[in-house]
Length: 280
Image (tube, rainbow, N blue to C red; front, top):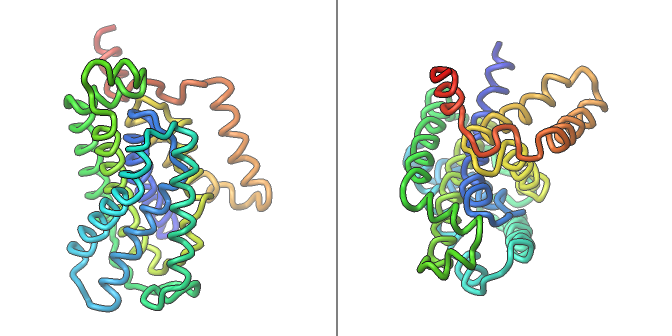
């Protein structure tokens, strides 16, 4: 049961990061191949604070979230001001993520490539509480006028700009909001695994986050969250298959894309399903 609980909690941590990327990619329409960098910034900021200076865990989480948000401004202001298209932006943020990884591998405060061992502070209450708060915050943001603006930008950025929407400011707001959630996810991840290394925050993790958003549905909150849970737990459930568990993971993604190209939930939420059942 301890092993099952560990997998579930790890899945919940990944769900927070996927939720953040869903705001930026699913609702605003810009692809990112570097959001693992924001997870890494949150993880290392919180980890360094608790390891070197014994900062309280809650303050460390807030600091990790703030550091991830500030770092999103570093990459977001020049790239989004230049109005890079989605594919070019994805390459730019990928370069940002790789540059960050190299820095983490060569800084003494992060213990370099050997990794950093921290205390295991992320318990079920912390993780589940953070997940619930993240879902509520994301839902409120996307139900507000900002959510409508994000969707308008995703559907037709030219028409949105002609209607008076400031593309740069709104896209930057979306990026910062997604980075904040990724920072929370990173802080919880570091203190759940009790060990972090720069190699944990590479293109591979960014791709997994993006795959969860696409497979879950580009216009949904609940879809990517559900798929993130499945994608995290499935390899562990199939661990007895040894080398075949990762092909099974890839096969599941292919099946979703072939038979549900709009994603698991498409543009709907779980709540809409229950409303439809009551109406029927």
